[in-house]
Amino acid sequence: MSKSRPRRLPFTRPRGRDDAAGTTAETPAETPAETAAGTPAGTTAGPAAETTAAPTAASAATVTVDPATAAERPRRVGDWLPFVLIRAAHPRQAVLTALVLAGAAAVDGRPGRELALVLATVLVGQTILGWHNDLVDESADRTHERSGKPIADGRLEAGTAWFALCCAVLLVVPLAISNGVSAGLCYLASVAVGMIGNVVLRRGPLSFLTWAIAFALYPAFLSYGGWGGGDHGAAPEPILVALCALLGIGVHVLLALWGLVADNADGWTYLPLKLGLRLGATKLLIGASVYTAVVAAALAYAASRVGLRQ
Image (cartoon, rainbow, N blue to C red; front, side, top):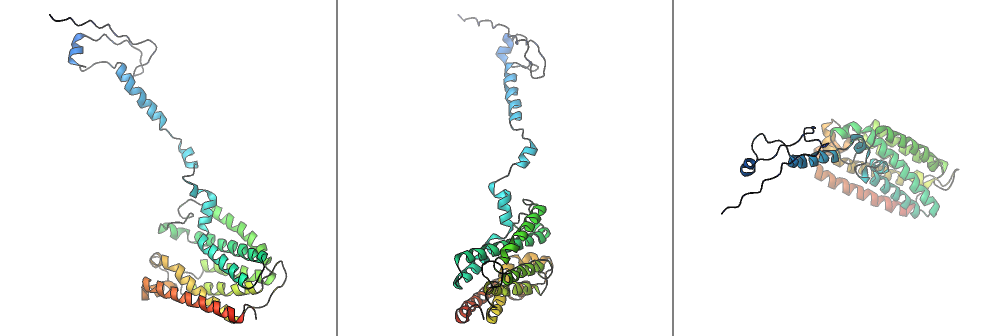
């Protein structure tokens, strides 16, 4: 004998609650036929529809992000202003140059405070050259999508870089003169020559000239150097000046190697590119490395034999 199915009570939606369409209505009672056959076409939305729709609306509200707030938030620590300023300054070249000149001053027997002054002066001067180089090359760096160029990729605004460069110029002048008037003028002249080279000669066959002149001024910066304003030391040995000029040419070729393809596409005709087209990049890298090492060794030997000053 079969048992009769208990009759289900009609379900009534509580008043005051909106359904998925935004209206308040009572849901008709479910009939036994509907219970047996499932949900027929045309069934009104019930509590299940409400349960499904509510999380969807909540999820949409959860993922909503204010674009202005997201744009203001730095993507990572490396994108903060101090870090991108350092990155745009060519920090490895700046630190290496400062350490080499400070080391040469140490070999010359300069006291610790003068070594720190030489280090700070050269570091600020090289930072100026790095920022200026990236400002001049902003368009080319963006065209070739060069990595590690904050000005070109938009992480550092050009106006901010110019402001930092001007502040650094105001700092490097008293730092340089604190090494002595003659020494300071020699170093400031080397920075000025480097900046001129960034704008005028670097794309043509005389690109090496500014590098040779800038490096040739380094021995005078060291030989006339001291503590405080005034005159110190004496003129450098001519052999050291000549060898430093040759060293500058080697450094120029080595640093230019990594951009030869892009520079050739831009129509540059400078010395490293001419050598690269004739010898090939690999042979040029080996030749420039050997040349620079030999000149550096000759410079160290000459300094040990004749000294820094005349």
